[in-house]
Length: 408
Image 1 (cartoon, rainbow, N blue to C red):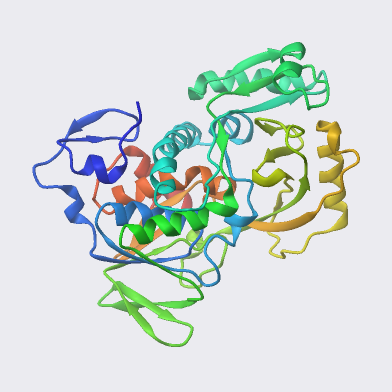
Image 2 (image 1 turned 90 degrees about the vertical axis):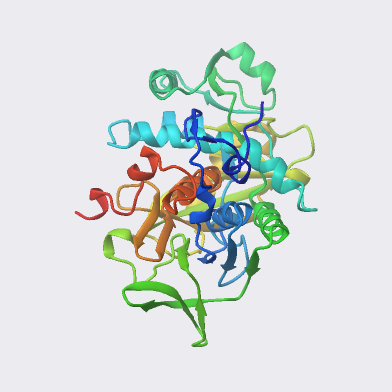
């Protein structure tokens, strides 16, 4: 049974909490706590998600995007909704927020099951949402050890997995190179990241919000110790009851050092494959990922280059990506890549999301790092909690801008 979206359960007699439990709703709707006028700086995955959540809850929202909506890190990403893989292979198990973060990713992935049909109904663009799962193949004997460790973490984090042998792997993904088996994450999925921005912008406008492009914000406007708007590049001021910074890896000079993002560059390539020659599921390999999109596009990526801010690609990295992609998918042996690009992931100091009020009237929605598309609904939900529109959960405190890890 599909879970209700935020604006729906705000109106009900009970309220959905981040981990699926319900508790009585106060007599006065918490939605009334929302600021009337909100400016969101940044039209990427997280900024647009926050705008959709707020507009759906009845707030007046305007997104100010410096360039084109969805053309930054969102456009450059892989569009994967791989909470299972991320928790079991990419998350540092010793991180003090590992368990809350794994739960947050699972929650956000479930939210997409409600978001996707709702926003799709408000846009002519095809979001390309699917839940066919992801898998991590083992091509070498030593790969089994990493799959074994991942299964242990899956049990710890509550991730559903299925271990398959070589024969089953060849049956479910016959286009892949012969492997020794795989770990399947049946609840993972993907969407078309290059369409996501257009779909969310349409949905926001359908709910009465505004999405404005070519609007560069230079600074914040403060009054009496509170942020009351922004100053644009042309000197004009835009007034608001609060401002949300969802600026990704872009450096915003007025932020305290602890809240500034570390850019992590990622390079990717695209192949074109006829229908039937691409994997049905997202392939999250140990050295490459492959994600088949609409119109025969196959995305292969991605490098991880902390601190680099150039969006230029380099031949050595592209060659490594192409080689790994061809090893995993033999059908690419005679195919040349037709596009290459780079994007910047926003990583916080402790590699965790940063969501909430940092000073009166100023909220942050930053630090999605490698999971901007996946975590966008979850970060939007935390933003509603931070603004008092839904009951505050422990998750909101874990990822608050006020946490000690961002201060020390």
